[in-house]
Image 1 (cartoon, helix red, strand yellow):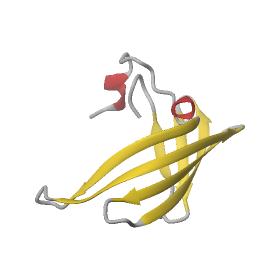
Image 2: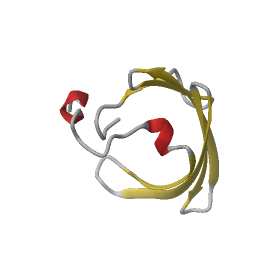
Image 3: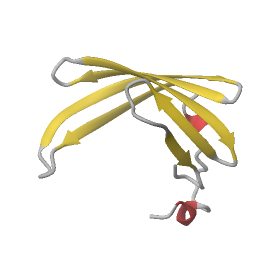
Length: 101
């Protein structure tokens, strides 16, 4: 897929607005054969300070394990972002167009 394919799609996704405050999410891990391995719920607290968005993610897995990841996302302008977290190697880069990131 190409990000420009979503340019006119609505509603417009603005990462720093969407994650401002409290967000809940759910997810699944599958193996390469499509077998469910694990599911989780994550509570996310987003806090913006200037051109940085902090996402404090608290995970609860179906087996009872808890985990936490804190993202520091730089708002670069022109719908572009970069993000880092202590347990992630390197820097994540993103761009939003229309309703996609």
